[in-house]
Image (cartoon, rainbow, N blue to C red; front, side, top):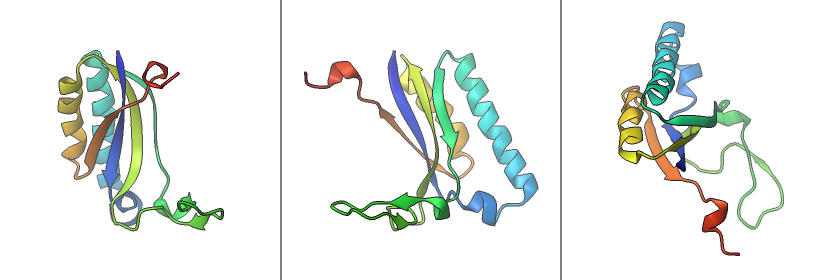
Length: 120
């Protein structure tokens, strides 16, 4: 199986700043549905987490030695969470990800680098 990271990309802070409690509950229900659908289709979730608001981020710029407050990227779109998933069916995994994109967030799916991929 190949391991992928599914990155949830969008305005991660809107969940806490502009959405009602009902909207957040409905959104979380869709994320639960995403996890259930992954399992039903044979994908294995090996890790993941929702990230706290971008205001809690600390960044060290390239070549820098001091951490600064806030996310590294100067953009409204940030990574709001991620899943680590093992699967043999990338196309089906991408199909499952449409559950998340229907909520208004983007998704980036990338394979991880395994030990076998690294030069020895």
